[in-house]
Length: 148
Image (cartoon, rainbow, N blue to C red):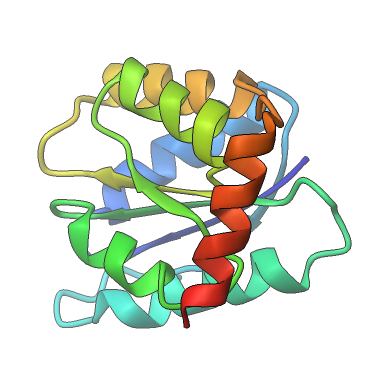
């Protein structure tokens, strides 16, 4: 599994720790920025980089992780891309459901709210939860792609 990561200025510091955590777990990581802390950057550019990379990846199970202050902006931006199913991850159950039921391929995290330990816990559950492939969930994902 290849994981693409991006963060705006509010998620920048937490992204640094998350990169190390994921590398230590043996995941293949592609950092989509930002390269330096820029207090006036805008989250849509990072959401776009990560969503585009997930969609273009040659890995059939490519995933993206985005961090911003609340996670909401990144989630809204990523979900503008057909084929992206971004979820807001704030606890174990929310991300387990997003993977099992919705086959979420992008996780958006609220950097202002979550501790590093909680972030790692949520990411671990999200990465390890498989999509159930229940017919109703497959049908609903197809319907999502047909909306726009």
